[in-house]
Image (cartoon, rainbow, N blue to C red; front, side, top):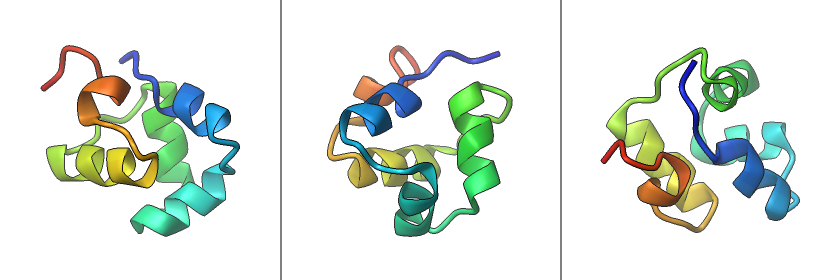
Amino acid sequence: MVKNNVRVRRWEMKIKQYRLASRIGVAPPVLSEIENGTRLASDGLKRKIARGLSCTVEDLFPGEE
């Protein structure tokens, strides 16, 4: 299981999972798996998530980039 801060940041910004998924162009189950650490996000998807949450990739995935 991979630790990331996607869910924490999304909760802080009060954005529903389905809303963020729609904003970045992925299905909600994909975003859920990334948040839970059961799926690895590609570098491009990490950048999309970071843009969608108005932060950096490093904020969401510390030590990965």
